[in-house]
Length: 140
Image (cartoon, rainbow, N blue to C red; front, side, top):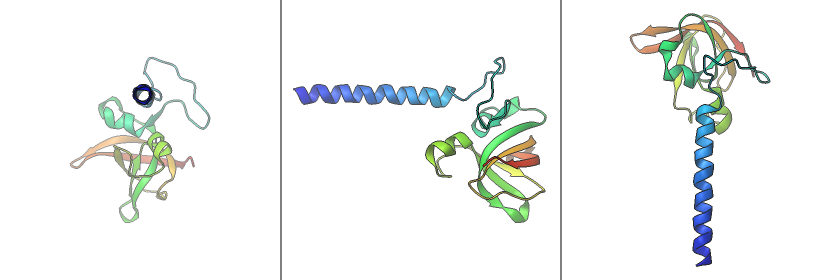
């Protein structure tokens, strides 16, 4: 009987922790456009993350700064793919992120697992979204 109660209590704790983690991951790093946010260490105010862009690309008109981690590279075509930097930092591998966005850049293409800030704009092609990058800056 005592072991059954302990099992139920532990299961409840796991559920509460899971719900809390999911809520923080979903809402903790998003920015409401009506809210002023102070940038944290090594973060720019107004930086867009890959998951935020993938959820509503129509909200991003004109030029903006996109932060991501390089997940794949096609140097001969001047294209690389990025994933959400927050997702990469939490799981540590390039395959855990649900969203990948291609970036077209005429300059030097960064290596995989490099965190970058990309200044550019969303361009729609026959294959979907692509970021037309004007500038790529290595963050780490």
